[in-house]
Image 1 (cartoon, helix red, strand yellow):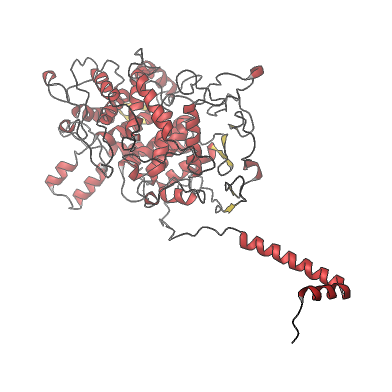
Image 2 (cartoon, rainbow, N blue to C red):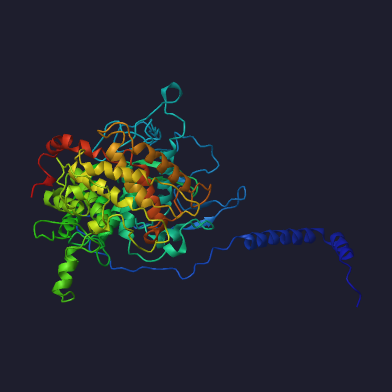
Length: 597
């Protein structure tokens, strides 16, 4: 058989039937292009054993607006630009941000209608001026610190400034962006859902943190507090751009979804499910609802906020001396009582557990009561008095000053070493063990908790314990060791809150002897640990773990650190609270506030 000569065959075919050759060639080229397009497309990343958490939805009240059912989020990988994969989602065209556009700081954050100079609270404009105190300041303080920042310096011609915000406020903005990217469609923040929401190819939630739902209510409350602490309420029209996704995040929608999810988890008795009530979770969720109501006075948040406070008060342990209330522990008192009734506890076990309390949970509960009081909700004075009785009891005094627990606030002349015990005065200065024991333990964290509980519960600037505790804090300033084992976001948050209240810019004390060195060390440490990787899902988050990240991973770390950087404006100074108490009572018209009972 004669071999076929390809070149000669094509030449003869062209001479005999040129249009056939052209037609065949066009189809071959088109087929090749289509094959390259299909084969070259990136395959979606595999999902290994996706976790599903099923729960029975609680029955909603008739007057509560049902949650919006959101469509499933679909991500598509876009062509590479400068060797970086950009990810988008199915969003309305007006929410898509051009990541290659030149950024204008007046457009970086603003109001949905484009008005960046509105005076309507609680909106936040783009002109986030830090002033000279390291954070933006309120034009007029409110019970919760601010409703919006001052405009600061203006740009040419008196318009908004185009200068970037302060480094601290920029860090807050980036942290809120990270939290927005990792909020689940149902409104919650949870470790499993956060990992699923990470941008493909740049996951920033470690796999070991993407399991379980025991802390979801607490994490959601903590993330909401970060938004509420910046003045963003459920009705906020403020937004900020996010070029990582890319999209813009409307803050009011973020907060509203989170609050609705919390209310859906609330039981009839005011506690939060599912499962047993964990008082850390309850205190954080309660704080979020109270502050949401306090910022807006919106009726739909008042009733669930008040019920959460009522449960918290009922969950308080009784004083061992038989008179009044005491502190709080992980489990609610109601659970201890039920276990006793069910025969699960002997009389001796019940007698021990019913009075069990610790400084950490108790201080979070005090902060929740404080938020409720500022919001005008009903808070029994006896509950705060009981918490302070416990805090005073776990605070040792120097031997020449008498036994621990004798401080009564005003007129106290005792001498204190400044330490505070975790569960009793004998544990003051001792290490509190846990899963993060390979991290350095900072015993001054208990001193910071003691300052906050006393400051917000008693408002006594002359309390001699405060300065003794402040001295211990500045002996252990925030720093980042080479192995990162010195990192403790929990300590840094409460230390910042305590010293800012004690002798910060708005304190009755002058000189900022303790606050200034702490503030400088804290901002240096936190800003160095925040992820700044461009075009990465991690940008804005705190991914370096601390001693307590085992419970909430980067969600806990990022929300806590945002709250720390909001310390400049989140709360009015507690030592001026007595001066303003009558004005608050007058404004409330006798409805709400701490009840003398």
